[in-house]
Image 1 (cartoon, rainbow, N blue to C red):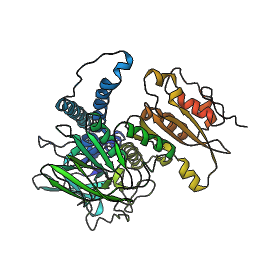
Image 2: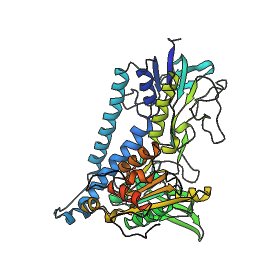
Image 3: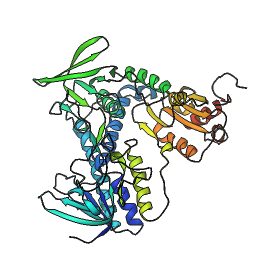
Image 4: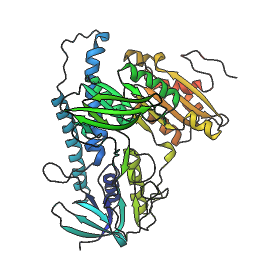
Length: 477
């Protein structure tokens, strides 16, 4: 039995490692358990996000976008480029180096903050004990005053498409050594669209099979419909209401069968990506006498403060309710660490932004028009297109718009939806405004620098009450 810790965190992803660092900053004796093992046999920190998720996918999106720009857009700027080619191996090496630098940085932060890093598979026992099994099968049990479970999620699997050499999950799709001539993707969500964009830009013929009736059902549908048109123009063959029923691999070719309202169909591809969502990681995590409950979907049950039903046991991130977003997990990790230290921190779940890193980017926070209609809430809307924004014109990035939804009577901002250049950065302005309970008038009265993309936010706020300057609109009384 080892010394007792004030806090043991199980999982070193964006929720777990942040929780561990914050706990250590607050003077708590902290350990973090992580089972991920690198090629050298040593522990790898950062979880899915840094290793096979957010960071590597954005590296590939950035590289592939620059390649596409060089092929198709440089000429508009008067830049003459000939014989543009993509070295896939070099692109992957760059991606891997970024991952290595960031995960190594976390290890340095652990050392600087005096955090004990424990390599192995963590399991919660009764009485807040944590059993850790290392790669050699050695078992050690640690005591803690508090345990934070942050084991994250993994790609969901479906029986019709078992993972293998030619059928891969989102992790495998980050390491194609050559560009597939024909690429199939099951799922037109965030992951499917981002990965589809990467390989489509590099030359793949991409078909996306989505079982749902609506494209990007969680996105404001005015933006979603426009996004569908833009992605189709870019070469993504997106087929809705397409439910995959089976797959067969022969001589390196994947035959995918699916059904829709018109009957049964098949498509042949060289690689197939299964991107149908993610599932919480709870395998071999909870001993039968740990006392921690799971909800009906297999997530660890927690309240609004991330407390489980067992005192001193907390859970955060993808393994609990709410959106599976790295920044949501990180914020929960900070809040839990501060709660353990006696502070009164809390997460505002109404102000968590979402981003899809395609081109154009799609980002939103708060409620959509569809949600407000379903709730019977009275609202008003202001929109402004990037086609009327000078900075967007200069950047040759005029697709999309900013849309602000405000309460009809109080004018309080209820949701902001952006599709366009740098939407992932601009959405923070909306998050800050909503965090402070701003009205659309507050944004309309704020001075924005010119020329900037952010002026579109200003104009959309003005448009809520019919005051937009740089676009014609009906006068509102």
